[in-house]
Image (cartoon, rainbow, N blue to C red):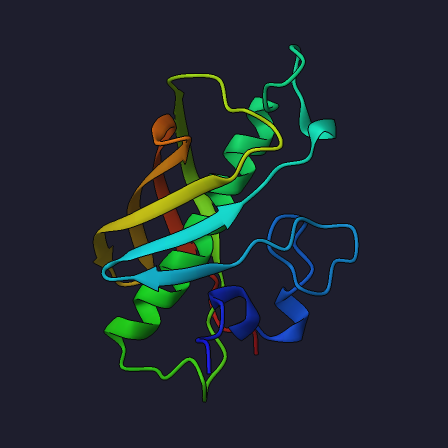
Length: 154
């Protein structure tokens, strides 16, 4: 049996995000998984996600993909650190506190993308990550991300 995607471990009330929400019928529904100590996500953007130039990806979508993938990877990393089994207990949600993107080369549409996130540090409710978005073996964007765990709602 294949492992569950991190996003499939979110409780229903946190599953409506445009980028990663499994319950958002109009969303991207990205899926992230462990690849060793890195979170990895594969996504192929349709041609209608172009920016100002035909055949190139809208920069805001690149930021969204890195953002949502890093939120999921932060959730999974914190669960891993806390000894939580993703098959048994839902993931805690993280939100973006800081997102810095460096655009290095245009991202193509209709081409598989690979988004990777590596945990730099976990401290309490904060998780710092370094991310890349690649296509055709070339890094197109890098992200420096800080995610914060949502406090329990009572």
